[in-house]
Image (cartoon, rainbow, N blue to C red; front, side, top):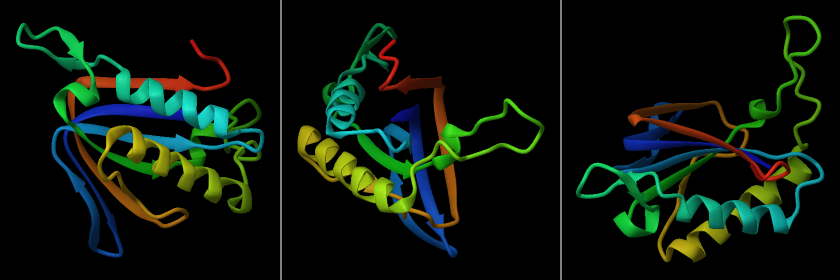
Length: 150
């Protein structure tokens, strides 16, 4: 499981000209899933996400977590995070999990994150053509791969 986390002042997701998700201060989480991802990947990543100290404290030092600021979250499925560009110029997405594997893991990820935060987690729509808007705050963008745990 791979995520790209962006600290945002605001973010939204629009599908077919209809806004389906919108947040103020918090995180936009792009989530990519592969076939061998498990519940353990979900648990580890969700805990890492909510506890990352990437929000400024009163001294403008990144010292606060999503929990500390009572921040909001949008999770968007993003199979292209597992693109392979090794050969040629057209990316291959063969590593990305097929919907029958990815959808349940995506839904479990959102549910687990919601449980840890104690509030709603907004989402896009799995497999939809989404327009994602964000105002990256910082900018702060972090990539985490549950298989590498770096």
